[in-house]
Length: 192
Image (cartoon, rainbow, N blue to C red; front, top):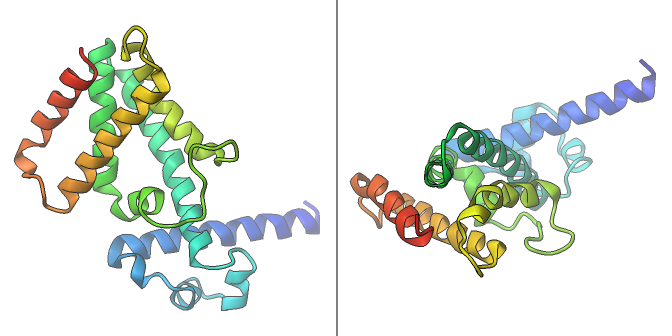
């Protein structure tokens, strides 16, 4: 291994450490607790080293969001592939999405609530975000219905899931009815 390759590997390792530490701190204490000073202390590097990877907290939030989008896409695809039939796939997608949001609240916030400097629904949307949407579209396209634009249907379904995730997390919806809400969403919105 050349010196240059070793330096690149070390840089990538440091970047992964910064993102993992930011994610861990945000999940434990919230995003307000994530500061460049605190991250630098936790990873035992100076703030200038941290700034050599990310220009600030916004870019760190973006990196966490991209990592979360990749994880969500993989989870959605695994759930859909394990389900038998269109209704079961859509139900699995909905439950997997809502479970991801519940288990990873800080990551979910990085993806959809906080400014990570990421563009959505445009040509230069980062690939992990496009892939997370595609993971929904792959199964929802088959149930959108005749004459219904599958992308718009997927956006509407995603918006409903996001609303359920956000309202449940905020304590605005009783948790004991979560499964019934998911079934209602699948039955009515997806007309299955």
